[in-house]
Length: 199
Image 1: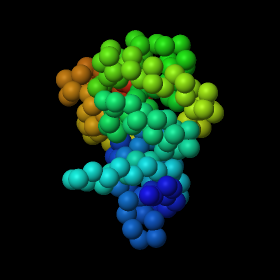
Image 2: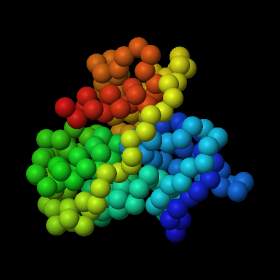
Image 3: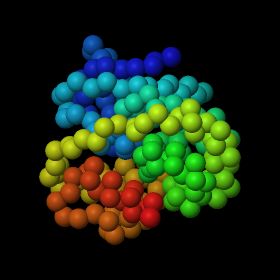
């Protein structure tokens, strides 16, 4: 099991990263909460990781904190929740917001996440209710400000990231149209769209 990576951040294509660890490039998918706090490309980065081994692939997921990884692992144990849905949940809600949803049994906030219907949301609340105390050890990652990306394809990258998180292309476009503003970076567009979806 790969539990942690420390290396150089080579590429950032939300929600995927390429991290060079002593000459070996690891492709890592991260929730947007982790992505927002990443350093610039070419700088050192450390991530807690979780490896998912399937018949057709080995997928590595990265997190800015142990708490976020713990939540991800707890979500994977819920029937009907796979890695993609767990990543979407942690992208749409901060760790504190998600733990608050569980504590207050807030189904409406969870059904805004792609791949989560009412039944799955209710199952999540029931199955994770007794684990809230164990998981509630703080926020996922410290807030960080990333440099603005003035690349004209920022909108396309933001849309691709939302689709990778489970939104249909039309819904991703709608969220970006409604919530993003001119001059925003890819990260800011994604953050605004996810907050808009959670309302």
